[in-house]
Length: 275
Ligand SMILES: [Zn+2]
Image (cartoon, rainbow, N blue to C red):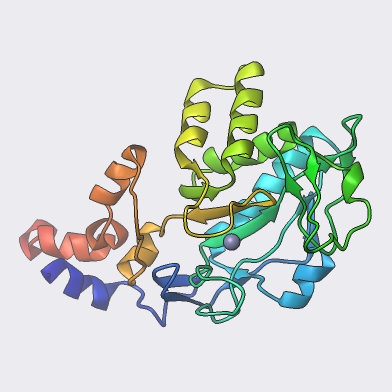
């Protein structure tokens, strides 16, 4: 408790921290001073439907990581463009569109799609298209897709896998979940194994990809959720649910003493060390 008190005085607090701060949980939380995702950049675009919704706000780390990941996929193919859908509202918190997405740590990303011949296609503009386990688009009879080229599209396993790898290898974010359907998960893992991707990346993907039991199966987009950063945890950011084995150390050693070296020195170093 002492460390916490000192940290509160010596370090930036919720209102003097000039970066973004995610507080609470993804289902009951906010994001303060969020970063805004630009509408387009190298390798990504926010399609018109999501531009109108204005859920462009996330933590500094997540916004930057999405841009880097899309840039990496683009570096492999000059036409690869990621469709970026919703992060959080400007103030975070509740919305009619999402149960989570409160705290700037969730983002919905359209799948990369390609023609039947394997040429990358630009992101859908007005909707999300469902794909089956073979990467083929699935008709939605109840609610026809607004984009009329949906039937020409195939799930682009190579680009979608490259995107996941970019997140998993980005040291500034730690992925808790990638919500996606079981069929697409299997499709991606098979692609990765056929193409000799590193075993640890395949295991990482197998661990974090999950078809949610309590909401839509996510067969038309990825929903990526990242853990609280260490500094945001200090300000009340709360992770809910599972902590993966590979994250345990990060959790164990997080906290004010690591975040705030000044407070740590005050605790450990009596004045005589200065003499
Ligand atoms: Zn989502």
